[in-house]
Amino acid sequence: MSIKEIQEEIIDEFSMFDDWEERYQYVIDLGNSLPLVEDQYKTDENIIKGCQSKVWLHGEQNDGNVVFTADSDAILTKGIIAILIRVFSNQKPADILEADTDFIDEIGLKEHLSPTRANGLVSMIKQIKMYALAFSAKS
Image (cartoon, rainbow, N blue to C red; front, side, top):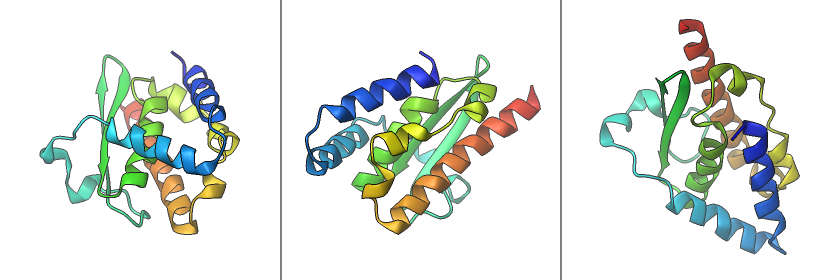
C-alpha cells in the first residue's frame, strides 16, 4: 500500500469513533499492538529528542525500503509512534520524504494533544524523515 492509501485507511478508522475518549483508547490499543523492540535498539542515539516521554526509533533499509521499529515508555506516545510507523515503515525513502502528514490534522490528533506531546509528534515525524534522507543519500 502507498503512504496515501494507509493514511486514508487511518482517517476512515478514526471516523468510526464518536468522541475523543474512544479515539484515545484506539491510539493506546495501536501502541499495545506494536511489536516489541529489541533492547539493542533502546539506546540513547535512538531516543527522539523533543519528546516528553522516552521514544526510541530505529530505522534500517531492507530491499530499498525503510523499516522502522519503535517503542515508548508512555502508552499514548507509543500509540502515536505506532500510527507513524504504520504509515511510513516499508516505504521507499523518496516516498517518505515527499509524503505530507495532513492526515494527522484530519483525524484531529494534534489538536487533542498537550503542547509537549504535539511537539513530540513533530519530533517523531522529523526523525522519520531524517532516516529517509540518510537512506536516500546512500543509494
